[in-house]
Image 1: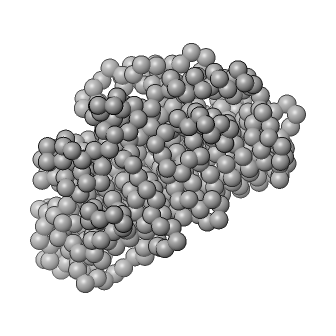
Image 2 (image 1 turned 135 degrees about the vertical axis):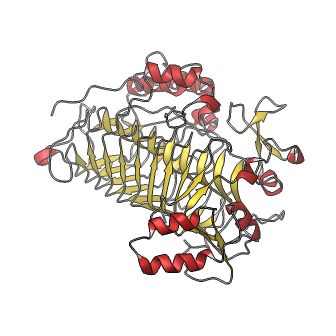
Image 3 (image 1 turned 90 degrees about the vertical axis):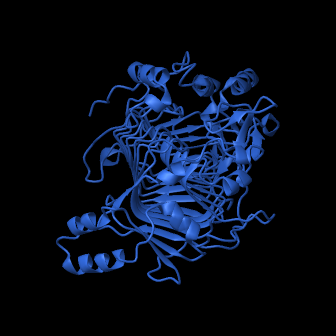
Amino acid sequence: MRSVLIALAALAVAAPAALAHPERHAFFPDGSVGAVPKHRKTADQVIYVCKKDSAKRVRRSFRHQPKMLRKRLRQLSHCHTRNIQAAVDEARSGAIIRLFPGVYREQPSRKAPEPDPRCANDYDEIGSSLLASGVAGNGGGAKVANFEYQRKCPNAQNLIAIIGDEPDPDRVCDHKCNLQIEGIGRTRTDVLISGRRTKLNVIRADRADGIYLRHFTVEYSDFNNIYILETNGFRMEDIKSRWSREYGFLSFTSDHGLYNRLEAFGSGDSGVYPGSGPEGHCARYGIEMKHVNSHHNTIGYSGTAGNGVWAHDNAFHHNATGMTTDSFASGHPGMPQDCAKWERNRIYSNNADYFNDQRDAYCKNTPIPERNPRVVCPTFQVPVGTGIGIFGGNGDIVRDNYFYDNWRDAVKLLYVPAAFRGEPDKGIDTSFDDQITGNHMGVRPDGTRDPNGNDVWWDEQGRGNCFSGNVGPNGAAPTSNVATGLPDCPGSSVLMPGIPTKTASQATCSTWDPFTNPDPPGCDWFIRPQEPKS
């Protein structure tokens, strides 16, 4: 076992940090206060944003709703700005910003240079990496724009920036707090915010406590379509995200949040990403996710250090992998990952073949600005054909979900050494107390048989991990790669060393890089498995 750990540590040193997304040094808000914002119909300040053709669009959209049509046309007379960023700049805390039907390309914001020479000294230096928004640092790492950069140069990296904090030490929202930005079309596709890959983020809410975004479509970021950072109290609701180069909806070191009625597709990493989640240590779940439909991404849901998240009644399907949480990447507060709960989700048909040779060649050889933005180029390594992967997690609960038609594994539970995230002194600190219980394996909600390639893959490492009440078609036991059978709950209090060959078989996959190592030797993650016979 010791020799395997040494080999894993060596691979950890070699593993490219480019596969983690770039973050400045970030901090959690005070979780003892705060709340998910509620929808408001009135405010002291209401700002209307429209385009030249909004009246035409309103008439077309509401043509069968004459009462609402008259109301929207009356409201249109109050519109006085064409750009959302201008409305944000004008807004006071507590304002409501209403967006009329139209396509918002935010041309003034696009003109802001990146990097912006006004903020040339406002960077954090982080570990060695090839990060998308970083520039080379003198120490051999990368420099990532810090909060001062965002405050002074808000549109360098962001098409729309809601920056809530002043340059004071408390990191708490001072202005632009409790903003509500909502589309007022009949459907969420009536209002389109389009980045065209000209900025890293289409919408950024940074220390913008109480931000509420709803009822529009957002597309074509070079990093995140919607990015919420260091924010206490947020809500994303009834929004469609499409064709982000990396993430659709991403929150990071934020608390008291809600993802609700979202659709995400076409992301190079994941459709939804509640990363570095609230530190509740299983006493509470600070972020809730419900009624999300995430499909045709590399990953439907992911979250490095995705702690304190309760995801229920969602659908993650037709991705390369449905869901992951992990303790892989360095520089993410809250490591190791712990205390997420996933229940009553449908996790199915996650077999999208985005790592094949043809896609590898296109993504490697086509410069990013020249790529078709609707072609998914993976930016993170995952095992194709997997329902959910817990890669170094503790205290996670996977309960009462439907897993079917995932051609590799429905559930993959894998130990990750702390060395993988650059903390070798912490040794073995993952794969403890994970509970996989009461799930429906290889069967659809209507009872139709639709098998997974394998139901449970486990490296048998850790302590307190358990599997109870999981059933296949007609009450059959789930299939697994554990010859002695899966342990029932509550699991053993004895630390199990695991099966070294299982753990080692996965390690080389961490060296994947889309440009330099798209097919790591000995790794089968990126070959789509054959469909199992039903």
